[in-house]
Amino acid sequence: MKTFLLSVVCFIGFATSTPAQTKKELKVQAAVESLRKAMIDADVAQLDKLVSEDLSYGHSGGNIQTKAQFIDAIKSGSSDFVTIDLTNQTVKVTGNTAVVRHALSATTNDNGKPGTVKLSVMLVWIKTHGGWKLLARQAVKVV
Image (cartoon, rainbow, N blue to C red; front, side, top):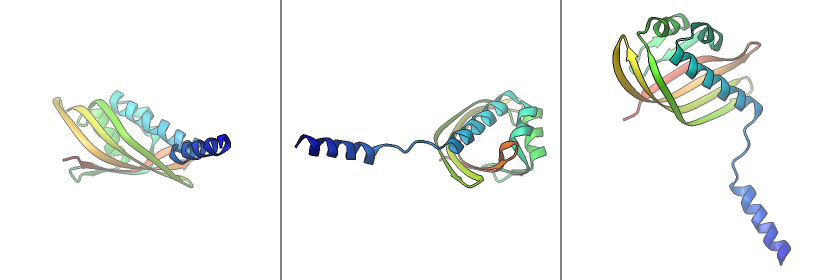
């Protein structure tokens, strides 16, 4: 009877546990965190390293930026993130591609005008010889 109870407890533990994150998923999460920090700090060199030359950066209002436009907006302050908080993040890696989804809450100071934003975001990352790079981003406003 003790063996049976132990077996049931072990089965329930395995059935309800969250699968461990893979090394690739952890590296993608680290890249997302590096991007978050670089956007807040307006770290152009770090943004350049993290973003693919083929970036398609979609805003919730419909504007789409290239890599150069995205980095210039951060550099110039027309897109100025004071804080960025990411929650409910999921990472799915398939081969050399990763899809990240999260909720983004931020305080902004775009062109000197304080504001806040709440978005649902999807990021597409690709693995290159230089590490994970952001290939695409699309955001939608949370209502």
